[in-house]
Image (tube, rainbow over all chains, first blue to last red; front, side):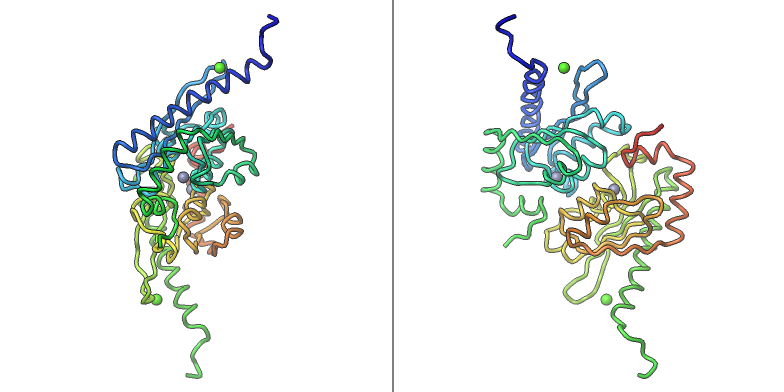
Length: 169
Length: 169
Ligand SMILES: [Ca+2]
Ligand SMILES: [Ca+2]
Ligand SMILES: [Zn+2]
Ligand SMILES: [Zn+2]
């Protein structure tokens, strides 16, 4: 017992966060292989027994479904389907990229209390608005999440600007 | 000319606002007839020649498409399709009900500068967040918009609470 590290529950959660964030990155890669914008998300519910399971996964569908509203997080919520508020309130949203104002607004609407963000270097979303409204936001700055978006934005600048409502020059 | 009222351009815009808000209400009624939540929206673009036309219309699809994300405004944006930022920045969003945090976040993401709201008596959305971010928000308090939602919420309280992420008792 002398070798046991402190706060094993916290370490366990961090390990789980890594695993679910990698799943979100896999979703982003699926999107990239479809010719889409590589942003992915996973919604994870924690039951009363402490066991967590995936409610839904998704990735940006602007190109694939010609959809302006199905960002990675929104596609994930759509795939998770209709849930009562009590379910969302026991969820964590994993997303490869800092959530924009729309996706942050969805997180607030449904009362999702915790968001794990792959990176906010290529795009900084409404993290402060989330925190100001009581949401726990953890930014991992995962090198693979940064790399996939950095390369995409460099090669598809106009498409990316369309996705975030930025005027192109 | 002595009988001419002041600010005819403003009055013209108010008349047009009435017409488009009524179209949004027609969308809400379509949703109601489908067994859905009666909230509708219309996105109107103003061209450089000052002529306005409808880019998209939509209504809440929670019941019909089992969709948690397609609120009236979101379905409207989805139906308007992919647009560059320059188009959204010349648009008005008409919605029968005060836009929630998700829909307000979408309005902010795409830089829609003006929102006409049918009513905010049955539900008050993120109007102040919109205004704080420079969006013009006009609340009409239209009696028909109030009536259709008031009756719906009375008869379908749990469904309505699900739509806005409110825990049901
Ligand atoms: Ca556990
Ligand atoms: Ca005109
Ligand atoms: Zn987003
Ligand atoms: Zn909404």
